[in-house]
Length: 191
Image (cartoon, rainbow, N blue to C red; front, top):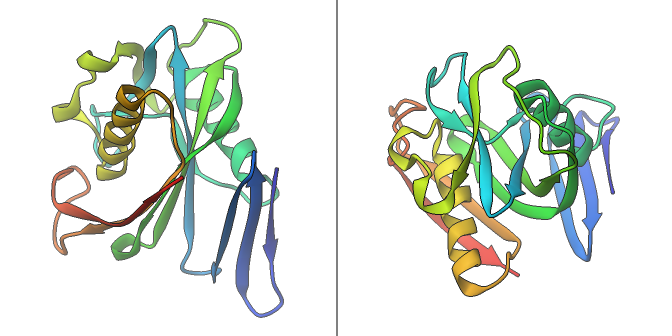
C-alpha cells in the first residue's frame, strides 16, 4: 500500500500505490503535517462526525486526523476512523490529496466502506451520523478540506463514478479554520 520514511537529510518521503494511483510526497520533516481520513460510503450515505474538540468544535467532519510514524496513510485513516467514529472500515481506494500550504498540511482521504453497520462517537466526537448526499450539513462543516472533498464526491457520484482528485486549497491569510469558504481550489487534477 504505502510507506513513510524519514530520510537522513531531515526530509520525509511518503510513497504509495493504490489501484494504479501513485502518490509521492517529499517534504521537510519539521514542516509537514499529514492528515489522513476516510470518506465512508454506506447505503448511499456518508458517515460524518461532529467534533468534540477545537478547532471547529461542534462542526461536522469526515473521520480524519494526524498520521503517526510507523503507519501507512491507509492504516492511519483506518485508525482515525476507529478512534473518532468507533467504526471498522475497509479502504477501497484513495479519493483525494489536498495540500493546504498556508498551514503546512496535506490531506489524504480514502474511500472506504463499513465492515459492519455499527459506529459510535469516540472521545473526539460528540455524534456520528450517516447523511444522504442531499442532507450533508455544508454550512456546519469543520474545515475547507471537508467542503472540497464532499463536493468533489457529490460531483463524481452525479457523473457515475468516483475519481482520484489532487488540488491545492489556498486559504486566505488571517482566516480561521472554521471559515470554510475563505479559499480557492487551485491545480485541481483528477483521474
